[in-house]
Image 1 (cartoon, rainbow, N blue to C red):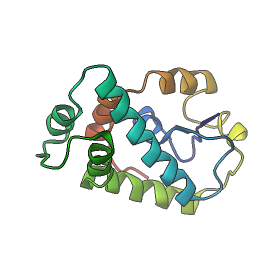
Image 2 (cartoon, one colour):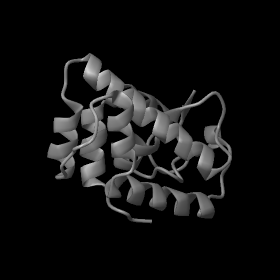
Image 3 (cartoon, rainbow, N blue to C red):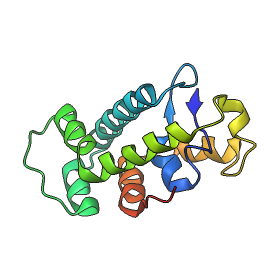
Image 4 (cartoon, helix red, strand yellow):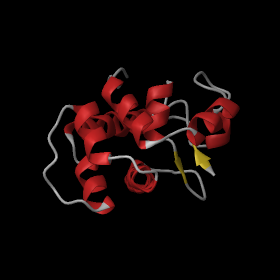
Length: 141
């Protein structure tokens, strides 16, 4: 199941950053955050498998230098703890504290993107599109 909630992800950039798969809807930020960390690891692994250079992508999109290890785990860990990702997660945590709708299914009908568009967007997320969204993310709550 794709976890999308328009109250937490009001635009396509935040949807790209925060949509994840999970067997059931999240009921608290910490679980959602763990899902995002897993998503980052998967995106890095897929990037490596497709022949991309995830380190180069991170450096180019975020304008930072990477000096850690070469494994997918090390790269994903580095990415997860960059200032950009941590600021985006902080913004998401604030949205969780303000959240009024817990049912994922109901969130599709609110403002934001439709269920069909959310699913289509999710299937197109790559490390490159994630980093593009992260580079363009603004904290507008």
